[in-house]
Length: 443
Image (cartoon, rainbow, N blue to C red; front, side):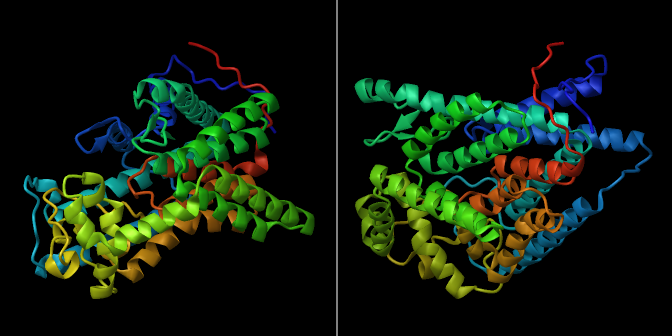
């Protein structure tokens, strides 16, 4: 067993230096989706650069590669999913499409599905590549996790510090809206709350591995808790509750189950004291039920005409019409203006996405393929349970299906990174290093 090793990459080696830069940027850029060129995030661009580097290395190695069998199975499941999604996209060409006012090539039928498949392929490839790196060397995982955790902590600090400034000067920096919901480096509180949930789970894993000391972890957790509640993210609150309930089911002792039940109760009381969760959910329901009329009343409000409110009204109709085959992956924006789905609601002139995560994808893919996708997302969790990995690692593997189940889009980058941590550490935990001090050495 390795003892007291420092995280260091041999900076005399160009490949190792690039790997360190890549891991640092991965942990940093996961904190936001706002940095993008057009609709492509900076981190996605970084992924494609890394894939090109790996292809060059692959060619120099006489096109030979060594696969870890569980990772190969995961890749195979996603290949099958992508193949089925492509076939269903071809079958969707029989529909009459309603193109946005300013269409572009990537939003055309089938082409948009191919772009989604390429995006998914890049995410899965990088996830498995990182998992392989972390499995071979836990020091790389510790380095990336620490970057991820402390950047997430800084985003919470940014929200909290900017709160009084926004109240006084209405600057809308780390918070927004009349109730000043915290959003960190995100555009709104909903997805930010889910991201903070991942940050806390990463921090807890660091603490359990002795890769962060107790006092800094407790202080950072308190700051993250303030930002988490301040995000007023209904999706994140439900996601945390779901994780706690799963932990309760998996707990081995009655005492631990009771403690988790008490933690859930305290959490629910805190949430209802800070956020009127019931009122928020009821508001969504009322808006969805009256969407046809309200869409004309709020015709100049893109937050109402597009996104989740419209999706909650339109997606169920699409699922009822095409429960088995869906309308084609990515075709929601091209078909949502069809009279049988839109009804008497206002016409959407721009390309739209329902923003409902897996629920929204049910309209695109159909119910059977969405269940298969959920199985793909749960596969790392199932594998780690099978090898009896520690609960703090299975929680990391559980995060991704939770994020997508509660509204996170499949192209979010951070859930794939968290799954890579889970897989990499999960398959090497039996020979885990105890590293009490991981102070970074500068080149």
